[in-house]
Image 1 (spheres, rainbow over the protein chains, first blue to last red):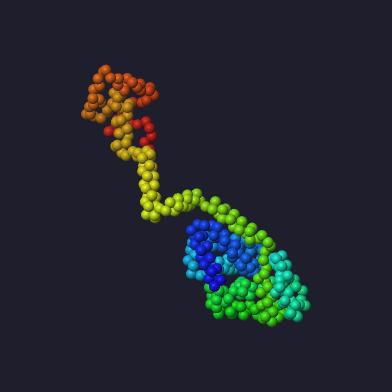
Image 2: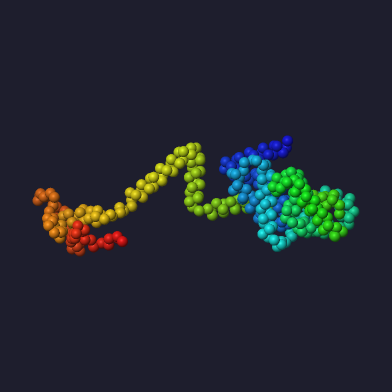
Length: 194
Length: 162
């Protein structure tokens, strides 16, 4: 129900944007930027790159908004643009990357979910918090772009398989297979740490 | 590390967010980029966009819009044709100029060298009571007499014909 209302609101904002109302597009930017930020940032691991990519993603979507026909939700559409642009960027960037995740991760230590995790799980409890974060981020960077995208959307952003398959334009089976493989890899990387 | 532990560890990463005020700054940056991009457009594109906006604001149908553009185009072509100098063709241009030239029409010094042709005479004899162009306007000394050789008037100006 809430999803329908959100989609209805999006459709109204898109119609207004297509009619030339730029403030309607601003509302879409405000609404979806936090989720897009999470997606792009967890794939690039760099704040500056994420910032540049977000601007490019919104600029591209604004140029293409007249071609949006509502066949998918705006959420799926903008995430498709975000994922594709980020993967292209990562391919161009190659191995040149510098981690800046630590600048932002400080807020996690106060997170309820994180405190619960570190309190109940004995191997994790023993590990140094910041070291664990750093290790996880490094492990994520070792994954291929496609696998990282799937992990980011499923595990970090909590998207269902069906939504991810629409965004990436692959079957749900492919999404599940990539997830399985990515989890295996991450577990191996992190087991070495313990 | 178990699957559940990994999932839990990854899940907490969704709370990673940029510093406060980041999204306001992002919106400002996007607006600035949009303006910059707009100014980078060529002049004709901006002009076309303004014309489209004008017609859009005044609820003019596509047919009228096309008609108006066609009218502007026709008027433009007409204006160019009207104001541009007429091209000179063989036998009409320079000969016509020689025929209407005040020097040639009123100056009896135009001598025909064509064999058998009659010397120049004015078509209508003017009454001596009316001042003629010759009396009202003195021909400058620098102006050269004109001759016609083989039905082609001689001109001291470059012909521009290649």
